[in-house]
Amino acid sequence: MQAVIDWLLEGDPAIRWQVHRDLLDTSPRRWRAEQRQTATTGWCAQYLAKQERTGGWGGGLYSPKWTSTTYTLLELHHLGVPRTHPAAQRGMRHLAEGMLGLADDRAFEQQLPRQDLCIVGMLLELSAYFEQAPRRVAPLVARLLETQMPDGGWNCRLGRDKHVVHSSLHTTLNVLEGLRTAIECGLKRQRAEVEAAEARAREFLLVHRFYRSHRTGAIINPVFTQLSYPCRWHYDVLRGLDYFQRSEAERDPRAQDAITLLVSKRLKDGTWPVQQRHSGFRHFDMEKTGGPSRWNTLRARRVLRWWGRGE
Image 1: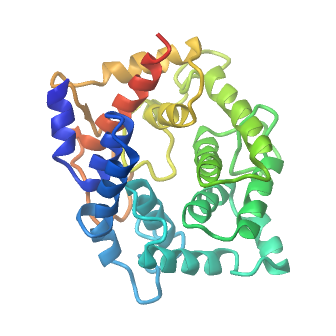
Image 2: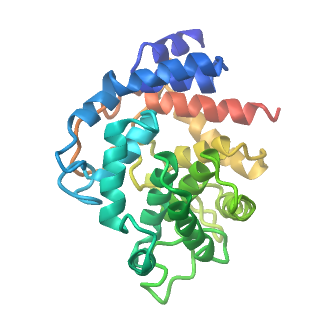
């Protein structure tokens, strides 16, 4: 529907550049010019304006949720702030030093295994996107590769709870997005191992039809069927499907259930809503819960575009 595309293009620069890239196949020169506007206009500029003198945000590294440095940098990445933007780079140095240390030294090696795997996935995503040195990215990748569970996913409680035998959809998506960002940002030495790990994790999601028990077929958690944005660390069906299109995964009939669910969420005007908002502190709200969402409409449209290529 052209009217929906026009509506998306009336939105924030963070929406517009992705519409041009993902839905309109505009030339890289055009969509990158649109992307550069995020640094000075709209949501990105609002986040950047809230940066503290330390270089961080929200008075903390990982908490408070969702105004801390980690979650603000994640949003800046998702919005498309240029990778070399000085303020974002300063924030990334602040986060890296505070979480693991700037040097790839023994202290770094000792601290890394103490981090929850969700956080390691986030740190990898941010380190790769904001061009941290490869010697800092490689240990993060290695940590995730060595902690992949036999069922193909990851679980934050691994190492803290001896009874953990099954992966978490939440943790798995945080890790997958980190690994995918590393590949997109030029990972070379570990690329084959990462792609193999991604394939095993995609199988984990497919076995669960993106939101169902692999044993009974029952919905694992009704929250997984509700569309949100920003997702924070939380999993939902659209987030899982969006990763599949991003990684250019092959169509698999086991994804049809999730695709049908996604289509059922479409409103009469061709848009998708924000159905839930994860509680916590926020710098500001990009969209209203319950109303039409440019974020979810963009993401749903590109998922269905990917799915339709297999017809």
